[in-house]
Amino acid sequence: MISHPVILAFRGSVRCWRHRSVIKAALEASDISGCRWYSTPIRVGVTDMEEILARVVVPLPTYETRDKSPPPPESNSLEFMHFYRSLGKEDKLDFLTKLSQDFGVDHKSVSELAVKLLDNQLRDLSTILQAEDRLRYSLTPRYKQLLNHISRVENGVKFLVDLRADVLEIISSKTSESPQMRDLSGTLKSLLSEWFSVGLLRLERITWQSPCEILQKISQYEAVHPMRNWTDLKRRVGPYRRCYAFTHAAMPGEPLVVLHVALTEDISDNIQSIVREFATLDSEEDVNKINAAIFYSISSTQAGLQGVELGNYLIKRVVRELQSEFPHMAQFSSLSPIPGFSSWLQGLLSQCRKEGRGSDLLSGQEWKEVEQATDSSPGSPAVDALRKLISTSEWMRSERLSRVLEPALMRLCAWYLYGEKRRGYALNPVANFHLQNGATLWRLNWLGDTSPRGVANSCGIMVNYRYFLNETSKNSALYLQNKVITASDQVLGLVSQFQRNSKL
Image 1 (cartoon, rainbow, N blue to C red):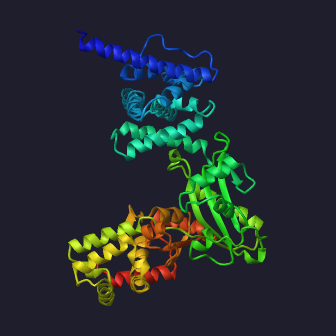
Image 2: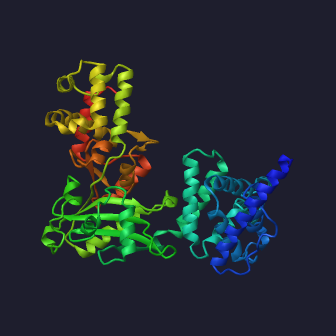
Image 3: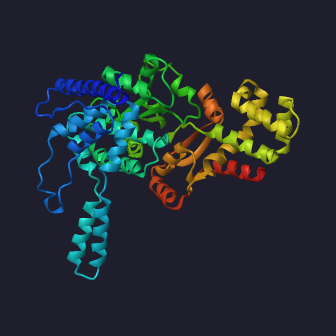
């Protein structure tokens, strides 16, 4: 009878040879010479990962030789990439955990240098500055050098963008609570922010004559108003429409962030007139009918670039582009969804019902109309009926209910955008994005999006964030520094109505 350890060893040997063949085949397919092959069978596990990392993550050069040490061989970067791509989800977690924990900052060295810096505070400035520089250098994670070199090989930047997407998913799913994993994400973000700085990005207008691959990706990446077919896509890059994307030389053919613009006579108050109107599909643009630019969709396509500011720069570049094409154009505005409003409202109703404060949200007359329309009793039954209406979108089928709910939902939505905060800034992510850019919270639009998605997410309400170009810098500074939201009289009036009717 074969012993259990022998069976485990045999299984491990089979796995390691299978893994070795995967990496070797990938490297041979890339016609890479000079790569170090595995000399003994290894398995996908702790030993395997330790061996790979020990080989490819070379020690940081000493402070004195930091500018003189030759770079590690390119094969290190390629081996790391191929190995990582061959791993399953759980193995990737283990691999990234080991990378971040065992090949990060040398904390002992940092502590020693910090003590030396304190001891040198009474010495001359030159000595202090050198001690500070040594300490700064010691804070470099050991793996940062590898990441830098990966960016220089073919498809290396795209690999690192996807790698950070994996790290962010691990963090957001709480699969790992490791602070070193967050530090790895921060290091990647810092590097990507340098590589994707606005000066290195290319603004590209997407038209029906653009390469098919780009058009297909534009359709696939559309996250705000999904496209139904190729005709829909043709409309969105055709007359009275503009589509722009930022691209980067390191990721050819890959749009990074995409902005869709409608050219209209006035500032639009509903999305259906933009994404469902096909009358002008083959018409010629009449410049006299173009007075406003409506930013109705902006989508970031790379999860790994989260936190790397691209969208705000794209809007500013597009404004300059449109001003060049239409010098008379003076109206710039978004037509934005309000994701999260319905779920926030459900939570608010639930909380008020639990605390017996349902009457705080609607006026007495509004509650009476809700009770009559839903055949419910006053108090908790009416609150439950309203929650059901909102969750099922049934109120949209009744003109009476729609008329009853309009004033209440509009003022609640105004408060959600203006008054609900996270760390002093707007809770709603879309609002936060445009307000950071210096836009004005300008107009709420009742039934601005009557699609099932629009009704489910925001009770069909949409919002215009207006860009007054001579005020954006001031508004942005007020918001970022003092957390002040610039809003129109319409919005502030709705907020005042909410405050009068509610006791929150």
